[in-house]
Image 1 (spheres, rainbow, N blue to C red):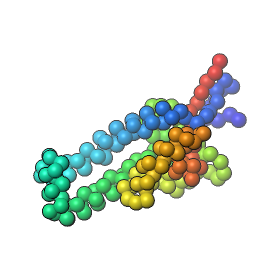
Image 2: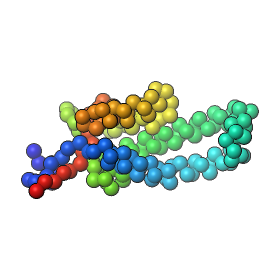
Image 3: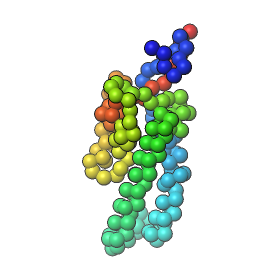
Image 4: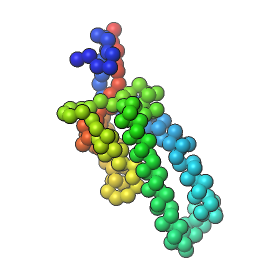
Length: 166
């Protein structure tokens, strides 16, 4: 089966674990600049101290500040879901996947829809039960024969790369 302009000496296969992790860290590096840094400035205005213990004490004494920090973390998580979902839905690649020469295909069944990409990326929402996926997803990816995260398996998403042989 010929896919994505494959030549006869090329084939697609699940992306390697190392490249998957590298592409993820590249995306997190980009997210740090476009999403997290603007919120960091807001947090510095809310919490007057640079010391962890003083900041913790300040948040304990001002419950409204804790609620605001929780709200900001939810907003950051939603923006991260949007980042991954938009890139993956429109291009089947995030900037990190582009650099690592990876892309997304459907594993089996019906064509992928926007909801597949959204559900696959719910891992970034910092509330229970999604927080459990911070541990389960990477473990599942390591033990999976196709190097799939658990949420990718549920949504029939497969991250692949093109291999060549001579």
